[in-house]
Amino acid sequence: METGPYIINKTNPPAEPTPPSTRRYHHRFDFEIGYLVESPCKSCGTRPVFPKCIDRCKILDNIHSVLAAGVSCSRRR
View 1 (cartoon, one colour):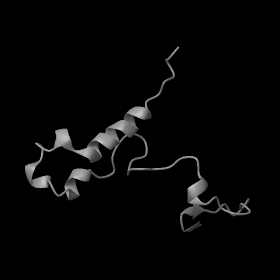
View 2: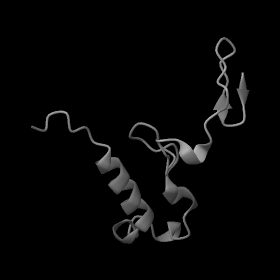
View 3: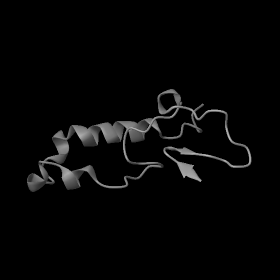
View 4: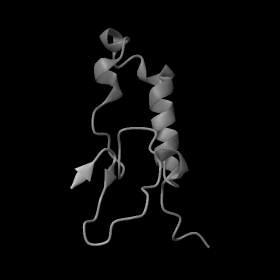
């Protein structure tokens, strides 16, 4: 059963759900595992000049930064 942003386990319900502000993992964009759910370009005000606007787009720069920070470093020695 889902209530609000929390999923409640009926067999072992938590005493109190963790409020979103204290969770360790915070989502900044609409992606989970390396792909966007919807392109931010679809609702952008500079859509008429697409793709010329890509080089100066701050939203895409932020998305690239977050995705690059999530790249696995398991081979790093």
